[in-house]
Length: 198
Image 1 (spheres, rainbow, N blue to C red):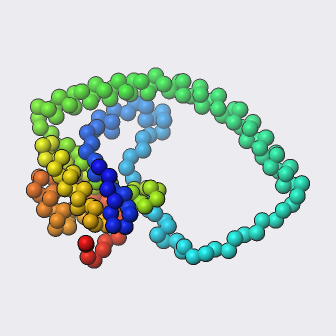
Image 2: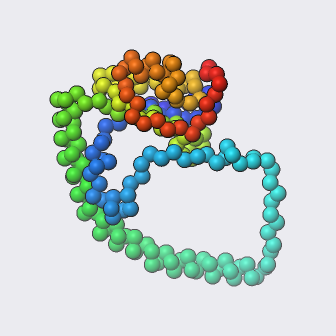
Image 3: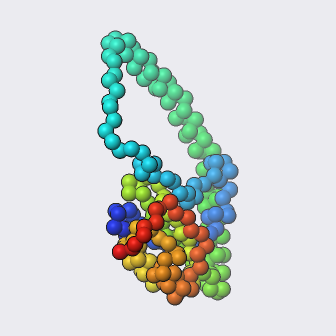
């Protein structure tokens, strides 16, 4: 579920169940690892937005045209070498990717059976994106009993819509988490705390 707070920031309150994807990753070693949730500061908040003087570019006439043509030729020759190499690398890595998908499918079926019979809690992620979608500003991971996850997501969506940050210690949020038996597994935020909530 996606909602917007009073400052126009996008929030996502999402129920996730894919723990095997973090553990079954034979393709990760060859591809250099997988991207995980990571907070990224929005540097526009710290930079001066005042008008800046534009640099005046000098026109060197025919010299610029020759330099542009040589640069274009170098880029074209580099692409002639890189594109076939990337295609060959993709074909080489394809069996590893298929193996990973099969392993994740088997692990997912086993995990679903365990979840069905042992009543394991589900994971609920509360994410805040910067206004320009340039990165993650806040991340909270909750563990909730499966039958209470749906109502909690709806309640958190309503709470986030009226606030500019998600704080598990906020009285209204804490009450909702306690009522649903949720446990905060992880909470990180770059959002600035406001003195008063709406």
